[in-house]
Structure formats: C-alpha cells, structure tokens
Image (cartoon, helix red, strand yellow):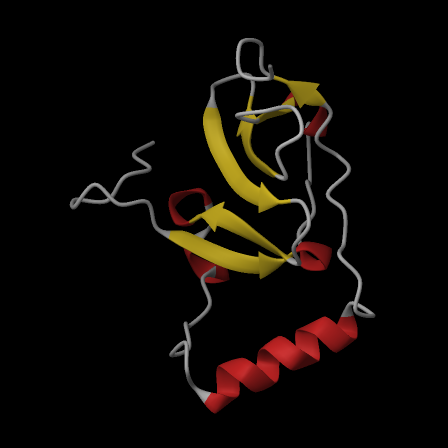
Length: 115
C-alpha cells in the first residue's frame, strides 16, 4: 500500500480519539517512539509494518493515514479559520468532557525504536 502521495506527502484524516476503535487483531498493533518518554508515537500493524495512525498521547485527535481508511469514511475538511471548524472543535471538546481520551489497545513495541 502506498502511503505517500505523488508529491511525497502523507495525507492524514483527523478523528476524535473517542470515535476510533480497533475492530480486530489489536494484539498486532505496535508503537514506535523516538524516545520512551515521547508523547508522540506512530502505531503500525506488526504483521506487515503497515502504518495505522499517529498519536499525540496528550491530545484529543488521532492522525489516521488516509490510504488506510475506506473511501466512505473520509469526511469533508473545513477551512482552518472558518467559524464552522471552530464551533465543531468546541463541541467535540465538550463531548469528551474536556478530557483526553486514551488509546489503550496498542500493546506492543517495535524493537530498536524505543530507547
């Protein structure tokens, strides 16, 4: 699966953490961190090294690789300075009781990347 687009970029889709679930074989998910204490991690399927998502563990959002998403799940984007985006961001924060959801189903670590 090609993750990079024709310009060499990596398109992502942002989802609220409380709206993302692992439907099967979560035991095959592993994380890569530049430093064991780093709040950011890349989660991959350890069976085939397919990147699944990027997680800033202190944040409310996951960055899912667009190419890994079914085409029907792709949502329209909003202009970053639009009032609609700001309103939806506030509503999402309220819906998550002002807490940071945890993605606790990633159990594995990839050797050689974690300190």
